[in-house]
Length: 227
Image 1 (spheres, rainbow, N blue to C red):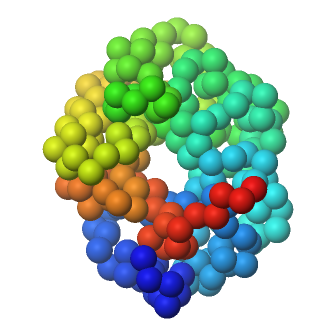
Image 2: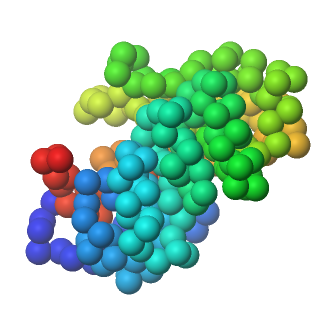
């Protein structure tokens, strides 16, 4: 990516390629607040972070009309820190996490939207549940008793590879999982969102049915992992 392009130019460029019904999550992890503010001034209002602590710090410093998405692995003991403000949690990988989110949301009299993270890659490093595990949660009585979470869709992370066919297969699997789970709608489950696709593969993801993409380096440049 060329660095002579500004954050606002990059944003404009990406938004021009996105269909109207696709939501852009600007993945701002490791990036400083002033860089995020460039995106904010260019009209971006949805930011994704993968560490709760970093998201909390940025939320405190930035305008309050921002919607914060937690896109990383969720540690249960840290849910309480984001419960007052988080807009969407992408990475719900088991019922225990969901239960904790519900408990913390109740303390703030909120209903927190969540996505079930489905394991679509074969890599061991990727978190998530199987289609069957997701179904088990949605039809359980225990889930129906949670009044402070709402499942609004699914999320998946494809294998880190240049093999387009493999990625395409994984994206299609997530789309078919979404369609299967749609029949289990309840008071706290209304599936509308398929979150898949990142800087390198978002166009492919959209062609496979994604309506929420998580884009970082194509907006902000390569990530800085010094901390």
